[in-house]
Image (cartoon, rainbow, N blue to C red; front, top):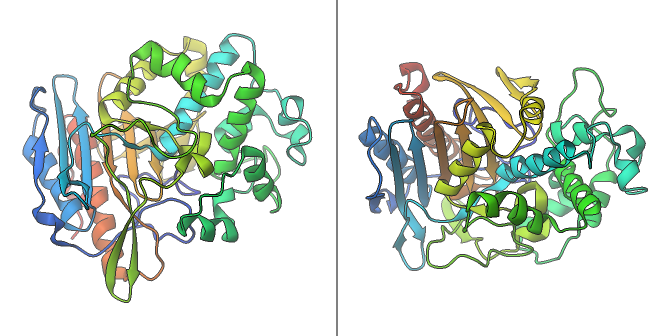
Length: 411
């Protein structure tokens, strides 16, 4: 999942977490800077592997336990795993380890919804009330398009104070989608559904999307991901867990929640916490850099959706900073050009998946540490935030065959 307003991850200012809602910020540098760096040996090199290594190592030096990056510039692929996959065993992070992709999940859900639109099983003008009667107050005014584009005005359940406290405490409560929606609708809407020039990121929208998909198809969202995306694309390590990650094998990147006790950083391994219990169809998919790249390339290349539905997906509303949000798809304005995809955060990860407009070039990154702590010092937040942003920007610019502009390098 991501913050309520997902600013361009490669150019945004540092983000301090204000709730348990799933975004990384920053933290003190640690001895992890000396952790090993491994490169995929079965890949041809991208234009400048050394700059990718340096930027990824910088994120680890600034406090992220590990950092994954995969860049396909159209002529070759570089994939790196830097730092540790598991602090307890000290296993080095591998270039194609699985990780929690957070709100990149939304692009999967929107793809399935638009497949149903193409099959005339769903319309973007359908209302929540039509398919889920009585679930959402004023549901007759909220359309499927509004859910997919975050123009419904529904409160983001991850911003609920009690929910947030339970989340960071490691609660194993099995929240149901209806229970999550009920948490959200106890709060007043941010604005009226579809209000002109209004937009607000809300994870609640995609919990409802998942409920709609299940109601219309009679299949669980996990089954739909497998049948409509993972299976056809041969994604054997991509799935939506019902509770905790299970299909991990040995290649799994643990995620770490960073907090501070006094001035000391404290890392909590959250990789066994029940992500599926609370993130669900808003942010619980597990995948790998390679498989995310394959998905995004297939989507933007027209394999997963007919031309008409893909065009609808890319019709964006402005969300600030030159960025736009379509139907589960973001357009990011970066110093090296406009790219398409999404970003995501969980309690232990902050990731990015983007591609060129045609899907032929891709970038996937993941930092395996999330700072969700208002007690972090400004210096700590600045260091990790800047390092992550530079690592993302370096990867995106590599994808576009460019170097990071001097103005994009901080410090």
